[in-house]
Length: 204
Image (cartoon, rainbow, N blue to C red; front, side, top):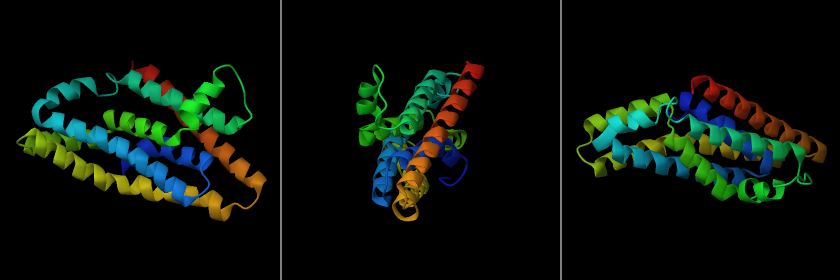
């Protein structure tokens, strides 16, 4: 399921960020692994809760209930994309603070974003959590099943994240081309962030 619809759910955030800020496959591997770790933590928590209180989870986490969490992710996507497009020399009030807390601290911000993306799961993940709720006899088993599932779905973003970091490292030799590629990735982040904002305001 990691290569299915849920990849399209997280890839627009993860891959352009890596392409716009990282220049090696190792950096892409680290960032995508951290992002997947954050998502895995959220899925484990939901798996444990699903074994004893899935009806409660189902009330709180569909899009019409968790729209404000989606909005946080969307605004972060737009901010990241804007900083990437405008470059490191860009300066406005609060821009330095935002860069330091979001863009320049990739590990921490990706862990947090991975957790946010995990806590508002895509539809297939909700189906799996429902299945876990049916078969898990206790919280421990629910967490174990959710972690196993989360590890399986982590392979796709890690592989693609590493490849995304490989593009500027191996395929783009010109500094101008690299800057253009990074700007394109930033623009993609902005577009997907704005689309998510539009989507949330239509369902709230």
